[in-house]
Image (tube, rainbow, N blue to C red):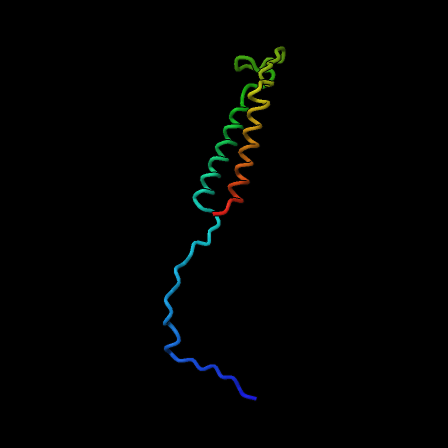
Length: 98
């Protein structure tokens, strides 16, 4: 049996040039752009949901009056749809590759 020997000399080390460091960060500019669009949709949806509650008329609480504005299309359909779309955009932004 022969014995293996690893012989190294000083010229073997340091002769390689350093490889350029590649960016290992998963998100790129497009990901952040889509995230901002998703956040804007979510915020817009929550802002569209805001308004007086069922017993508020002209900014004052009155338990004798019923305010039907809580059932408006804007607060019941459009705002939640915009929020769900915003969350969908966020999922897309996270899963999108560079």
